[in-house]
Amino acid sequence: MLGGGYQDLVIVSDMTETSRNTKPGRTQTFNPMNAVHELVHCGGRHRQAMVNFVVCQLFALLTAFWFRLYLHPSKTSPFVRHVVATLLGFYFALFCFGWYALHFLVQSGITYGIMILAGVEHMHKYCLVVALGYLSICQITRVYVFDYGMYSADFTGPMMVITQKITSLAFEIHDGMARKEEQLSPSQKILAVRRMPSLLEYLSYNCNFMGILAGPTCSYNDYIAFIEGRSYHAKHLQNNGKVNGTHKQSDPSPKVDVIQKLCVCMLSLLVFLSVCKVFPVERNIDDDFVATTPFYGQVIYLYLSMLTTRPKYYFVWTLADAINNAAGFGFNGYNKDGSPRWDLISNLRIMDIEFATSFKMFLDNWNIQTALWLKRVCYERCPFKPTAATFLLSAMWHGAYPGYYLTFVTGILVTLAARAVRHNVRPYFLGSATHKLVYDVITWAGTQIAICYTVVPFVLLSVAPSLNFYRSWYFIGHISCLLLVVALPVKPRHLRTNNAPSNDPAQLPPSTADDSSQEKTS
Image (cartoon, rainbow, N blue to C red):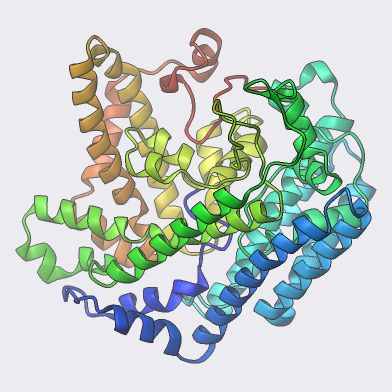
């Protein structure tokens, strides 16, 4: 839910590792030339992993334009588009990860066999267990057998996205072929897959060149509609074939959106290289810093140090989105002014993240496709403690570092506390614009600090430094959240979803879409 896809980003791994090896408490001045020098002249496998990733993503961007223009659905068959997308994906994977890329084929092959042989009634459960188990074995092996704490050439990053796709498709096939129409929620009806995919379609969906390195995940129906050239037509029909009275005769161009997203990528990378070593996260647990800095100073530094870790995610996810858009994938209808929207598979909304006024708002706009996957696969279907189950699944999916589990355990408590505060306190501030503004300012500051407090273990990775940080704050976040959960009443979920308006954010779970239908299924 916090990281995702190729979250152990190789292009900035050396910058992060340098920050890890910097003596805590020593602030460094940024020199742009030094940053470029380190980016270009870093050593050994770090450099090779970075170069491979950058080359593949840039080549994927150029290939995406070619794919949209010369392998357009009007010019070639879906079979050819599937074959080209799959072969290019495997080539990129081999180039970046060597023979470790065979894990992508093994994981996909085993789960496809389960889909074919196990039957649609139960194969979604088997696929979830096998895909997640295979991913976990690879993550544990990489962390504890090969190289703990090293970020380069992390072949499990792409496997995380493939795991999302495998499990999403398995549940969508189960919904479309094993359940009755009246048992499905509105979103499940749209996503349901009514026939078993062929092996080529399955491999193309999992391993296409647009998303093999950094995702994002997407629904199977959306991907097949893109390959077969039906995505534009469907969106035209949703707009009644007209936008501002003008019939759309040709496919909308993603050029403007791709350029904008590439500009965001460059800005994000520049910001990250400028500040990543100025505010090292490890300084939050430095004894001298904690002893000599007043608490308000520690709070400000925590916010700044965690803020500087986000641009690397902005970079990789926005670049991945631009690659998919350049290939023609990601069209999501039209805005009111008639301009095309290319945010169908976007993974984040930067402004909504930085100015989030609730924990839910932050999570809803961060790693969006992973949040949707967690909602569709776990939250909507879990009959008991769905919030805890969703955070547990997210932690298992992210990897084997113990810091991840500390983050998600803390996240459960923060989520429940934020829900209680919003449910009980927010209505008193809606009487006037001034009161609402005051509430928004206070909740913005509280949300940002709560997020930073929660994700420190996610960055530090290990248990000891994470507990050192929480001890230096006297576990104030945990204690405060626990008191709020105990003191403030919140209706049970089934009462909130039955009685509350679906557009009231206070009544909806974190990281879910706006619809409030919550079908419980096996």
